[in-house]
Length: 272
Image 1 (cartoon, rainbow, N blue to C red):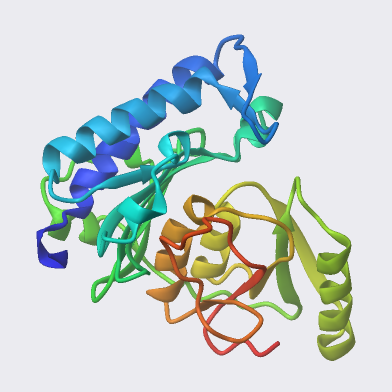
Image 2: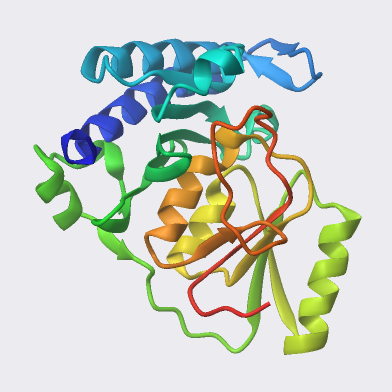
């Protein structure tokens, strides 16, 4: 199954979804509330509809679970060994603040594990992507790159992680969801490693910073949903990094309860 999945397809879908999002972002827009009181915009809806339609057209045998279409009974979902897990606009709060730190997330889940991930940040025009057995990559100026297949796409991109030299441990934290537990964890890192550099970022870009090697660790002791993390986890894991629960086991997907437990994402060889 995995050999039939084309990263170039996912990039093209993400780029078009990004254009739809930017059309809303660059103008005044209305903000609704979902049932959990989180914000919802026209951009979420437009991106969701486009991604679901395109994935259904290209990969009709793989069902789609999207944040905006998540009300699918577990009795149905539990039969899905393979599925697309989509967040059509990750970082809606960052979108509303207009700070550019939001993304389009598409992940392929197989047997509960993320094996393909595509994250595109429309304002930054940067894509991060990974495929099991292929690796993780970063592509800047993504909308301007003319590639025809996955080989050309990989060759036009930077393989992750990038080597970064620094004297301090780098911790990335949520810009909108910094909990007291996260602050306590950062203090523990300071006690072990000394001075720590703390970077704030929105959406799944935090996981991308770990995959790049810019951040050593991303502690998340606040709620997230499966579609928030799946693509980023695939990208981190294909750099030999880890996204783990408190028992050291990786996050898994398509659970009955789509809420993630608390987790820590870390680059290869980082010891907490």
